[in-house]
Length: 267
Image (spheres, rainbow, N blue to C red):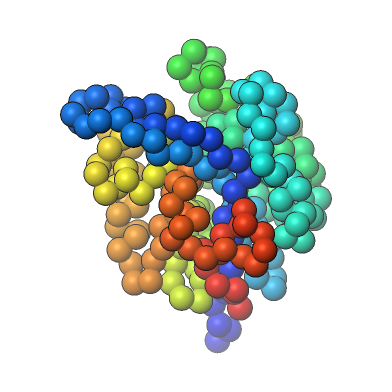
């Protein structure tokens, strides 16, 4: 019997900005605690072994950066290039959700299969997505690009869960967005759970604090419960989507200070 596939998992930080708990947590004042700086890092992730390379989320595009007034410390596509990843040759991209900082740059992956929860795609192409509390989090051009990818028959829409490749599974959890997904990756020393924005900060689980941008609050809490369960597996490592502590809890990769190794090289 062939050995199961395992992977190296890298978190690539392409932007960071100041933030406070009062800004990022829902109804923070109700906790009765003083506000404090927390910061916010922006990541995309690379899953790879000798057989394949899978990119999880693609960062925000240059157009979105201008729209939101954010200048990345390294362009997401350039960051991938420094790792030897050519987006034009990537066969699979997992889009955990359709916020602007997660699905920009899809044009740079012209031959990739893009994998997304069907509920996520349907929501962002529905009239309610244009309402102000949702519209500010998405770039219409990114949504249009998803439609183009679907027209090219490169968009794989799933419900509940989907096996992307041996040892790589994507799980729909909802909450933050209607079809928010997380990714479970087999590595040589246990599973890595890429929570993306189902969990922005470790503190959300540790203190049961809800993030401020939420589509379905009860489902957000259920997603937290599932992440706690996944994180309890032997050797499991949980990786939130925006926490500066990711860089402190995991080792860097050589002289590339913006890259963190979550899992060891795969087999």
